[in-house]
Length: 183
Ligand SMILES: Cc1cc2nc3c(=O)[nH]c(=O)nc-3n(C[C@H](O)[C@H](O)[C@H](O)COP(=O)(O)O)c2cc1C
Image (tube, rainbow, N blue to C red; front, side, top):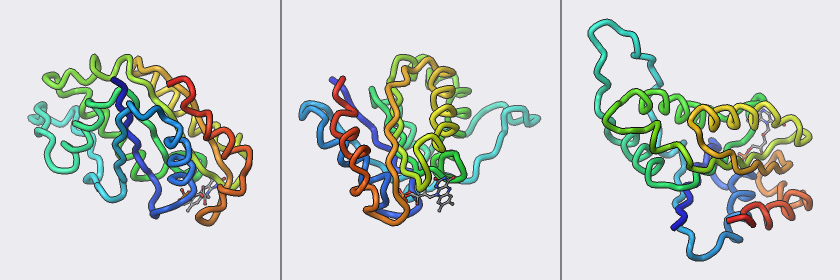
């Protein structure tokens, strides 16, 4: 059974990215599980690269919000990064979550690398400029998916600045209706 994890990356609630994601998700088949997590409400500690720190070869076992995000990530067949475009990239909470993938990658007993392979990665983003201004964000996530041997399943963009602006982007709303049509 397919199980979708929606990771909301905006730093505000009810923004355009979330609205676009919820519109797309309405068209998922009813037998598909959905879990929605708000990354800003599940803060991860500032990421520290401990990979080569002397005497610190063992990663601390993930606890708290890190454990929650890790378990949700591993349990999903499909991960939807729903991040606004901030400076042509993903938002800070989204980027920090992605940085943690590097730690999880190195915790051997998790088998993270093997378990991420074959999952599908989807991207949904709202931005105030033209859609192609999200190219770097989409490329970043395509490359990240490829690195983990995940399948990049698609990107959905919508235009907006203040909340609900995206509802007036007819093309985006039409694209949202069919975004998950292959599921
Ligand atoms: C810190 C910040 C950086 C932004 N950078 C961009 C950008 O690079 N390109 C763009 O088109 N819009 C940019 N925007 C506009 C947002 O993408 C837009 O308002 C979007 O609706 C925010 O997502 P949300 O509504 O889901 O919170 C930026 C907004 C903020 C707050």
